[in-house]
Amino acid sequence: MPNTPQAQRTTKLFAPALTPFNADLTVNTEAFIDFCRWLISQGAGLAVFGTNSEANSLGLEEKITLLEKLVEANVPADQMVPGTGLCALPEAIALTRAAVALGCAGTLTLPPFYFKPASDDGLFAYYSRIIEAVGSHRLKMYLYHIPQFTGVPITCALIERLIKAYPTTVVGIKDSSGDWANTERMLREFPDFEIYPASEALLEKALPLGAAGCISATANVQPRAIANALKAWGTPEFDAIQAQLKVVRNLFQSQPMIPALKHVVGEHFADPEWRHVRPPLMEANASWSDGLSAQLAAAGFSMGTK
Image: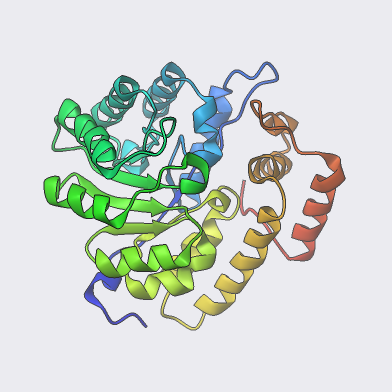
């Protein structure tokens, strides 16, 4: 059992919700809304416009429109932490401002990633410009550390500086580095910060150190099981749930993640249109997707209720 005060916080699960496309690669808004409702019904919050949402294949207007459509459809904004980090500062400000105006619980904000290397001073200026331009006490910003994609790390020194400057605004981080040593360091150095590992496979190591939960790609396909693991932490049931979560996670990681997730979601909802992805991604290929389905079935995997 965890024995530190920060480990007693309520843990949360967020899914970087997959974005369904029509055959012409326009967003299937109705399917998106339905899927987001399903994720919430299974115990997950919505990190829409995350990496596995194909966020950087979506335009600014598309993202704002989708947020508005979700709210119009009574999908609770307080369950949403949309990705708002963009290379163009004015666009990052506009998307963050829209998220705050719609009542979203927070924003998940990538660093700008085109000009490299980026200094901590430059990144601090980027985040502070967003915060100051939005100018709202309701903004709760979660940093997004995924250097294998961005090439721009968010260092502990930068986190410390942002927390000091904006203690009620910069409230957490998603660590998608895949480097446990980095996640562990964050957890130990920032005990009051909301730190989310990017994989449910790390829960057994992260929860004792006070992790806030997880924001995981595979929360798109096993949200209920991950939510159950978070609830079961500290009980005899946790180990068995965690073991099964790892099996499923490893199977998805063995294939191109986004096409694999969309393939399985499409199977679950009997909707082949889910297979569509925007280039440069390629749709799931039967040479591996049929095998993945068979392996998941053999492992006893189920997405849960429709």
